[in-house]
Image (cartoon, rainbow, N blue to C red; front, side):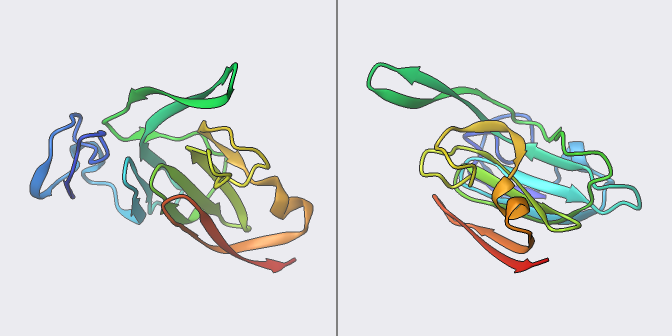
Length: 164
């Protein structure tokens, strides 16, 4: 179920209308969810299935565009229905979190993937580009750290990690 502001398609009902009371997300009806999270402009859910988790996202798509005065993140489109995300095969999601316009997912084994709006570096990829595809945060792999928890703030990401 979802409700509230839907102007960016974040409720997953296929439109951009607001909902004043809980409404079932038809595209997810019948799927047991292990994790759900909501940001200002999007939402994400991971199914609770015996096979690797389906992760579905209602997203605002951005792309990075170079301009004479610097990098700009340019709005592309609204995806108002939940869509299956492309995570590595056999990925089982243990945690999801949404910031205002970015998302973080931990898969079993402690790897962190992020995507969305990256203007403040909140994706953790060493730059401020945005991405509409999940990308592994290499920092934790390179430093032999296992990510145990993640919380996205509006424009930042906070992670609890342990040395492997």
